[in-house]
Image (tube, rainbow, N blue to C red):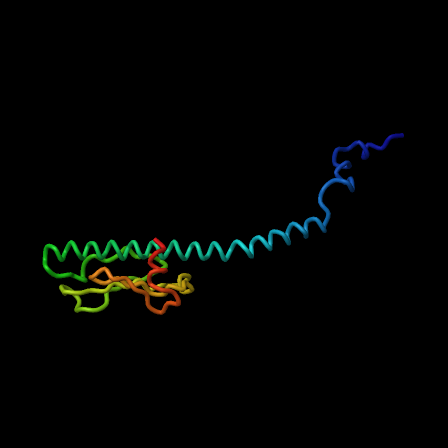
Length: 146
């Protein structure tokens, strides 16, 4: 007498030679864990550098706009030419008086997740001089990210 259960397709899946054991699964998870610990910090550094490059681009655009105003008005106007707001940086003009002035400095101040960026606050002034404040790196290193 034959047993219908033995001929059922699902009965063959319980074969001990097929599938993964718990040890194999744990090994795969351990390898994935090691890969993640190596990949995530590298990604965060890449993302911080990309956000810094965006901030530098916005600073340069605003400075170019200010130079255009200066060529027409013979003065900079800090009430105009504001950079596009980014979630990682706050932009503000410093130095000089608000409105028409003969000098300006524009800062990109890191926010939220960008606070861990070692370059700190990026600064660009009317002479094209770029610098960084609260930074553990040189201005040349930080501004080279573009």
